[in-house]
Image 1 (cartoon, rainbow, N blue to C red):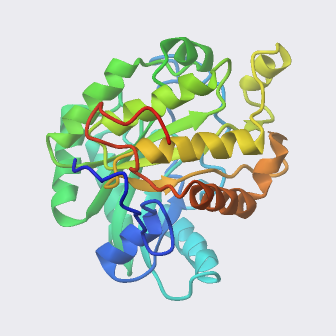
Image 2 (cartoon, one colour):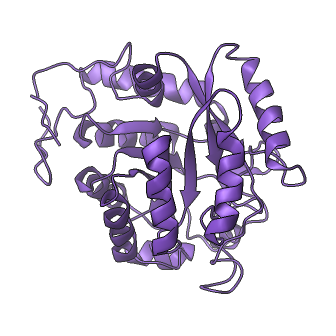
Length: 325
């Protein structure tokens, strides 16, 4: 990846980081939004093939709390979510986002049926497929590579943390080496990868979180989603919280973490998300996370206050500037 001089102010539209919205307008010339789908998959971390119980932070809907209802077929889901999104963005194109659970955890013929059904919908310009790094057998990657030749494709995978002690606490059920191997496998086929990480996981310090962010900066991935940990009712993490293993981040603490991270991300990396949503009726904390736009505005304000931007301290792989003036 290329470098960015530290004294060069970088702007993407009116933002100081490389936003998904900016990239979509550059790629397609107009607004593009994701249509979130639940294709009815499960997860090998839930059904016992790898582990049971799922990641401790994961909701009953497999992180698809805002996706369509699996009681409906995919096209019905697509139309419902699309029409709801159109109330905000009347003129737009769409990316079908297979969000809930593990969306490559099925035979290729099943994946082909589901993915192609969405690609056939008017206005769809691509797919984003959320999965686990241990659910990418060769035949699935071959099909993803085929899709990548004829549509705009992202594969999204949850790293969450590079720290194996954290992985054990959250029952991730795969290690960081597995994740890196999956990235390499996808990138050999030129498939775009978006890495998900979570700040605020049990027993992680500020520096541990930044170590995860720096590790992603060094990976051959094209996008990043940074999530604030949301503790939701009826998740295994509730017991960890009650046992004192989890402390909620304060809003100003999270904003500092985000801006610190943006400063050492390569400028080419697309920032898909800087915070997340949780259903109000399920959320235990932190409650300030419900003020999503306040959080995003505070991130913009902190970047401006520092006169900073994404990539300010990036000098190439493994060579960020560690001291800030």
